[in-house]
Image (tube, one colour):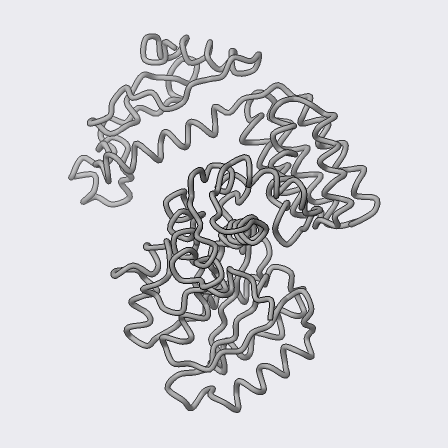
Length: 424
C-alpha cells in the first residue's frame, strides 16, 4: 500500500487541525455549529492543499453524520442522483442529523449538475459541503449559493507549514525511521507555495530518497525537485506557479513572457474563464487608472472567451495579455483600498460627520443630520472645500497617484482643488 504522507497524517479531529482558527478555533463559527449539532450547507473556498477535504471529513465525524463524497471531475448528474438516493435512505428529512454530501471542486460542476443538487439541499435530504479554489460568486449558481454559507480558508503561513513537517516527523513511522533533521526549510516552503499537500509530497520524496539519517538542506530539496519536475496540472501543483508567472510577466511589461505562460496554461487545458478572470484582476491591480481602457478590454475578453471557448479564445486571450503587458502600470488603486482597509481596522467604526449624514426625516434634520453640507455643484468648478473623513483621521492620505501621464493629471487636479491637503 503506497499511501502518501499527506494521507497518513491527515487530521481526524478539530484539535489536530492546523490553522483556520477563525473557523475551527474555540470560538470559531464551525466549532459553534458542531457543538450545537446544526450544520448548514456550506462552501469552503480557498487555495489548494489547505485542508478543505480534511475539514469536511472532520465536520462529518464530529457531528456523527453519514458522509458521502463526489468529485466534480468524474461525476455526472446520474452519479449525483444515486448518491442523493443513498443519503435519503440513510438519513434525510425525518432524522435529527441528515447526511453530509461533500463535493470536491464543485466549481467544475456544470449548471445542470448543480441544479440537480437543489431539491436535496432545499428539502434537507443532505447537508451539502462544497470545496472550491475558485470564487463561488462566479462558479456556483445563485440558487445553490443562496442556500449555502461561504467560508474562506486562508493560506498556510510559514509557522503552519513548519508545524506540519514536525507532525510528520513525530507521528509517521516511515519518516521517524529516517531520523530527519530540518537544517534548512526555505526551499521546502518555497516549492510548496503554501500548499500543505505539495509540501508533504516533496518532503516525503526527499526523505525517502536518502539513507538515514537525513539532513534536510535547501540544496538537497532543490536537487530532488528539479529531477522530478511535474508538468502543468490545472488541479494543483504548478497551477498557481504558472499563473503567477503569467501575471508577473504582465506586471513587468513583458509581452513575450505573458504569451509564453499563457501558452503553457492553454496547452495544459486550463479553463479559459480562469485565465480571463486573472486578466481582469491584473487590469485593475497593476494598470488601474494609468490606462482605464485596460479594464474594459479585459472585461470584454472575459465575456467573449466565455462564449466561444477553445481553440479560438486563445487568440483573444493573447491579444488582451499583450495589450495589458504594453500598458502603463499603476497599483495606486490597489494600494489605496489596502490603506483604507488597514485604517478602518485600526480605528474602528468612527463616527460619520454630521454634515455627511442622510436626513430624510424631520427628526434627523432637528438632530443636525446633513447640516452645513455644501453641495459641490452649487460652487465654481463644481467644487467646494469640506472634510469627507471622520474628525479623528482628518487630512489622512490614503490615495497616492502613481507617476504616469493620466495619474499626473489626477495629481494636478487634486493639487488645484485641495491645495496643501493633496500636496504630494
